[in-house]
Length: 116
Ligand SMILES: [Zn+2]
Image (cartoon, rainbow, N blue to C red):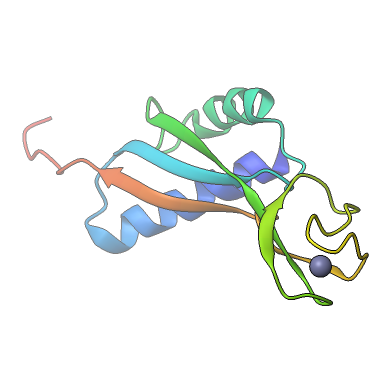
């Protein structure tokens, strides 16, 4: 839940920097290894947005595949777990290089209409 609150805070802050209008859309990228459950995140976001400028905004959650790099043979590959072996040399010198984080990638701000 605190994660959802952080995302909403971030988006609202960004909107205020722009022109202070309401937010109509927020796009969030969730890495496959971030440990975030997309369904529950969506639910929490809607709850977190209530009574803020982001209330009623559409949240689009995009999952991003994780990737890893082998420090032994140097190949890049799609990672499915933190503890996987390299698919090339079966070594364990694997670094997760992407898909661990969650970030707000885009926000849509509505123009402030003067007569509402
Ligand atoms: Zn390897």
